[in-house]
Image: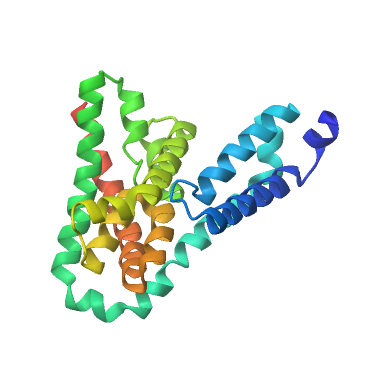
Length: 230
């Protein structure tokens, strides 16, 4: 069985889709925020791969087709932004300042933690792109000399945590303005968080989508500057 699964061209693809489907079903049935479909699918895939004895290379070679959809899926987030373009025009200055603040907060927090925990330079630059979408973050990490696999893990964890706690944090700090909510979620937890923003409303989703793109570009520039600080 193990040899068959390792040699299968679509085992990883099918397993990933089934695991995500289970996650979506659990979220709809139980309504708990912690039951994020992506988080559930990650846990199920890891458990299945370990139980079946399939090595990572074999799994990835049969699941890589999903990776090809990552970039076009991110680009499609521009659609809700286009539909709410008038809001961007009305709040242009607030949007720009909000996104810039989010980017600097992300980079600054990584610098602070690197100093606190005495991380080496490689680990430091690996974590700098943690709050931007994977398609951009991997390139930034590789360019700065980081470990891209750890960067991907950090991006996923950041996104899932943001998705799970975003609504609670906004409620806790009484952030009710849809534009502010969307910008905060997008700048801190990229595309995974944006799925939560879209659940909260069209304006939140549109602003979060905008934040993903602009935050990614600013992080490319900002990370190249922050890499010299530690």
